[in-house]
Amino acid sequence: MSTTTPSPAGISPAAPESSAVSVGVGGLWRMLRGPLAFVLAGVVIAVVLSLGARPVPEGDLDPEGPNPEGSRALVQLLRNRGTDVTVARSTEEAAAATGPDSVLLVVQSHRLLPEEVDRISALPGDRLLVQPTTQLLKALAPGVAVSGRLDDRDPLAPGCALEAAELAGAADTAGELYSGGSTACYPAAEGSALVRAAGDGGTVTVLGTGTPLRNAFLADEGNAALMLNLLAGRDVVWFAPDVPPVGLAEPGDLLAPGFLLSVPALLAALALLALWRGRRLGPLVAEQVPVVVRASETTEGRARLYASRRARGSAAAALRSGLVGRLRPGLGLGPDATPEAVVAAVSARCAHPPQKLRALLYGVPQDGRPADDPFTRDDPGLVRLADELDGLEREVRQS
Image (cartoon, rainbow, N blue to C red; front, side, top):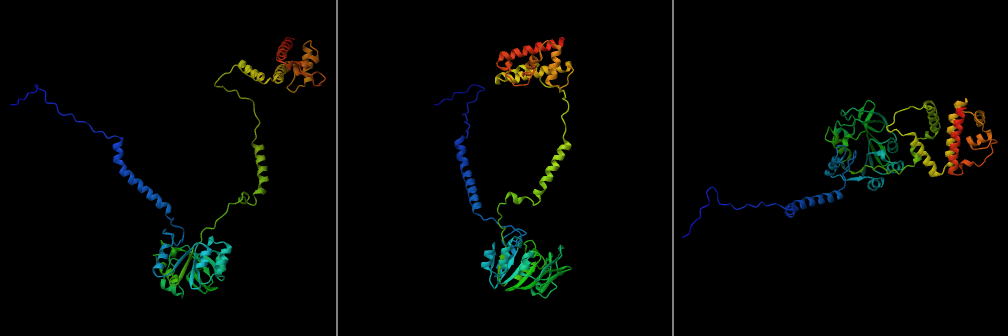
């Protein structure tokens, strides 16, 4: 028979202690290593794909450009209709792909060099020139010339007997206008937006704008129909030349021809400006300084500098110049007084001979010939000079 011992009143049986579970560094790493590995793998794959991906061309009238100004949509339409479209980025590629039964479409002709224009003009087959340069126009269609420009975006009507234009109807062909040629379509007040002329080996069609070829406007009006009628049924060589490489220019090539001629005039103008704006130094302006330095400290500091360099000659010259500057006003002499005048005036006030005074005040004898200054041979001589100058100053002021 078992008995139960009752617990004291007011005290309940102790409940089992609950231990708090804390996640350490190792547990946190085990929890996060899976997601981190997944994210890292995704980043590595994205970097590898981006390094191997070819950048998409986005130039104006670029046959591979999906941007609004590109012409990728027209190229896809032509290929869907069975037309073989070859993209050429250089004159060599265009010459290799062009044949008697093909049509050479030239865009961005301002990038062509003069020798490239000559080579293009010698190629066989038909040509379609989109807003060509004057040099390319003269080489491929000598009888055609630019006669004006139409900036209005309103579509133009064909107004000609060219079947490709009549079937397409009105199109966005406003741009450069031309005169001449055997056939002129989309007329305006100053000329026609599309002309056709006979060239060497085939016909040359000149279009004054690239709007009908661009992705953003291909579906408008009769733009797509016009381009398909002009290009479909034959192999198309789309020549979009790259920008020609330009070498580093010499520093002299960057200067205008008249720069060297203008340098003397610029220097003369700068000299006149300096003379006009130049200012002489005025009198010293007394102003408060943040720290007041006693005159004795300044004198001691300068004396230490002279002593460290053993510049007894400079120290003697400073002592003599200071005394002469203090004596001149009392003697009635100006700042430009000669040593002879100073020596004569001091000699009249004291009992010393002029030769001794000249050696004392200027360090040279009266005849002016160089001599060894006895006061600058050693430090005691410099001290003796200071004492004699002080005595001379007291004697002159008391006389």
